[in-house]
Image (tube, rainbow, N blue to C red; front, top):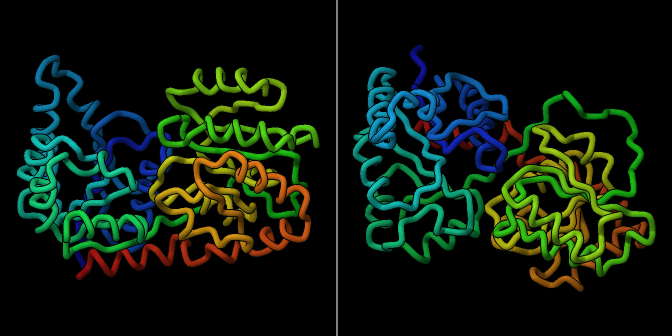
Length: 358
């Protein structure tokens, strides 16, 4: 039987939730008997992936001028030569002319677009009319949370939306199977991007909590353009002795397992993999109730604590609750793994398989 040929088009496969998802999707589709091609607009690969990779940045490197045009030509040629039947577009898409050009390049193939974030300025051109026109006749606009799908329908009144949540996938490497001694560490892991992740709130809440007086430290693990901003904020809050920054790891499983709890203070999200992975590893989460994702994953006082966003006092209180209320903490820890089993790779892969094989 000939396998259906699918191309996943991404910005890159480099250090980020959407990028991590794109690589997980390659495994899901390959296991579902698709021939998988990853096409990246920019360079950068940090995660393992299945199938074939075509890097437009590298392939167009010899073009000194008109680089973007060259990428478009290469993309069209690759789709034709490899007889791609299905396209899953996981990029950010907010420049109208570029998106109209890309739709022309994609042609009559089956097209699926993904919306990874509640911040629509990254996924829709400014014009509501043109956004609706671009998306209304594609096979599906896939939203990673129910809140995103609801917002899409309110704004654009599209009939082809569907929610498929992001899955978790934990490789065996780095996971400790035996009893793990919890350390006095609160862990953030993800991209160092102040606009999205709101490290100001995180550090302010940690400062107000005073849990460092009980021996706790805040570990920040990741990579991004705002590392110097974060370092300055640490100094501003006089937390130099209590906050440590660690480099990005594509499987920070041991650090997550050893942490007392992980934490998220984002201004907005999509369906954050860090929360799912933390719970899947048995570590409860303290998260702000931002749009979107956390409230669809965290059941307050069952597998974590969900607090009002932009409220440093509430955040500080939540940190102290997990440290002082042992019964609550261990109840959430006990429920963590089971609470996200519906988001395992196999279950989510089945949803993708059913969608693409219609």
